[in-house]
Image (cartoon, rainbow, N blue to C red):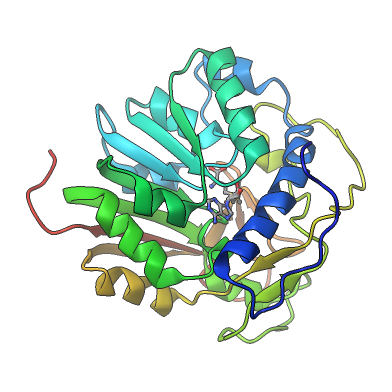
Amino acid sequence: MTDTTSSPTPEPSSGWREIHDQNRRSWNAITPVHNSHKRDQAAFLRNGGTTLFPDELELLGDLARKRLVHLQCNCGQDTLSLAAAGADVLGVDISDDAIAFAEQLSADSGIPARFVRSDLFDWFDGTDERFDVAFTSYGGVGWLCDLDRWARGIARVLVPGGRLVFLEFHPLVWSYTKDGTFGDSYFLADEIREDEGVSDYVGAPLAPSGFESGVRDYKNPERAVSFQWTAAQIVQSLVDAGLRLDVMREYPYTNGCEVFEGMTPLPDRRFGMPEGLPTMPLMLGLVASKPGATTG
Ligand SMILES: C[S@@+](CC[C@H](N)C(=O)[O-])C[C@H]1O[C@@H](n2cnc3c(N)ncnc32)[C@H](O)[C@@H]1O
């Protein structure tokens, strides 16, 4: 683990860089803990295993020879699964430990991919590369403090006809407590202080290579700051950045994560609402494209 000495949570008045950098420290601290729960991931990937769910694969479509950037790629398990599905991939993430892990996993699994450690906003501003597909999923956008900057960055790095593929937990989910009571406003103007830092949320459904008990009762010494972006804010930011919304989906289940206690296990590592409760949107899927020629 690197750089895990505790730091004060940046105040809301802090600049975006300080906030993102604090999140980097929190992700660095939790990365080895998350991976401690996942059995031999390199062998799993080398033997043809995938960490991707059917829903993102359906939104992504054919990946053969597509230039794909995986935004906030974490430790690269999905990035390498995308590479194994035929894409030419670059993963970008702010966490030093996550990117180091991803590079090692690529070498150990024999699946080629490139990784860059960078704040997403810096990478958007600095890169000359252009992509057919930008992919982001499950717990990405809520760590970013400026949605319009995010959307403009995506529009910048796509070729004309290129597509953003987005699959996230539906923001409404975070208004409920674990026991399913309505706890927080859906519309939140301020940052959310995560004083306990990024949590150890990895359970068996997020460890398709096999679950290990690994590190237990870990307390993250690094606080974090997150953001509640609503569905409309996300869509509007993409439209304002000049992207065209092609697909918008809401799903009555989550992938890999029991966001409420007592959820109903479904095939493919999915979870439906707890029995007896009404349905609500649990994931949000979007495809948005940059106007221009299609990339075929
Ligand atoms: C929940 S994980 C995303 C998991 C990802 N969907 C996957 O394929 O494993 C969130 C990631 O966002 C990254 N992150 C947070 N803030 C970031 C920023 N400002 N720039 C780039 N990456 C960031 C974290 O380091 C972490 O790896």
